[in-house]
Structures are given as structure tokens and as C-alpha cells.
Image 1: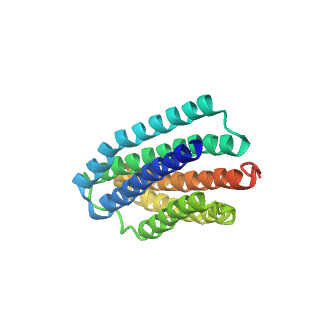
Image 2: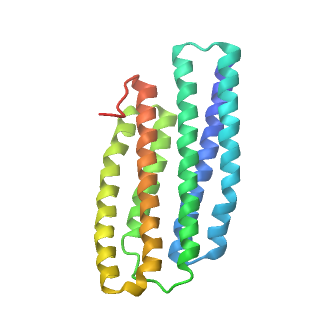
Length: 213
């Protein structure tokens, strides 16, 4: 009986994560295409993600209380709660990107988003792969996600340097420049969250904590 409930729980978590992936795609597209309606769709979806997290946490606690799961099952339930929390935070960052998208509509574009499509692709792949690692219990793939996060961090630092140079030469661009800076910061944080989920998947599979290594 518990095995079936755990299977249903994993399905619900993946449904939640799939919705968060969709929010990420839509948030990025809203920036690239200056699509106000799409940005507002992302913001409106956040309530559904919050409800997913509440339902998953309640179900995990209920299963622990009713079934006294063995060590491996308990570890899975604890990881599901942690991962659902990270997915909820990831969705919050998508909402934040959508809000920056709305802010940028008030100004003409500062510069072509040369790096945004690339960073977005890297991050979207990180999120997809870390969920695949969870489904397939692939510890090696989960560990690899952390290495990709370093690439995102480097692109963020490069974008920061370029943007600060532009703003120093054109002070009138500071308001939209701040929105762009925050937008890239939100993307960088999504990469961090994908790496965090990878660490949790690694612990689930191997039983080893790598968060602080």
C-alpha cells in the first residue's frame, strides 16, 4: 500500500515540477518577446504551485505518521518535501522574472539579449535533467548538475560587468538596467536551486551529503 502511495506522490511532484518548467519557459519568452499577457500568466500560475507544495508536504507527513516507513522510504519522503520546497522557490523566481519583464515594457530595450537565450537554455536543461535524475535515481547526472551551475555563475558575472559598463556611460538607463540585473540574478538563483535539487537526489540515491563539499 505504501509503495503505491509513494508512486502517486512522485507523480504529483513531477506534475508540480513540470508546471514550474512551463513557468520558466513562459517567463523567459515574455522577456524576449515583450509579451505582457504571458508574463501575467506566469504570475497567476504561482498559486497553483503553492497549493502543490502544501498538498505534497501534508501527504508526506501523513504517510510518515500512518505507515512508519523504513529507512529508505523515510529518506524518500523527506527528500520529496525538500525538493517540492525548492521547486516552489524556483517558481517564485519565475514570477520574479515575469515581474521584471513587465517593468522592462516601460522602457526601450537597452541592448540585445545576447546572453539571455543561452543562459535560459542552460538553466532549462539543468532543471529538466535534475528531474530526470530524480525519476531514474541517477546520482551521476545529479552530481553533474552542480558543475553546470558554475557555467551559469560565470555568464552572470560577465553580464554584470557588461551591464555596469553600459550604465556608467549612460546613467539614464539605470532604471531598466536594474531590472535586467535583477532578471539575470533570478536566473542565476534558478541554477542554484537546480543544483540544490541535484544534491538532494544524490543523497536519496547514495545516502551521502554533498551539500557542503
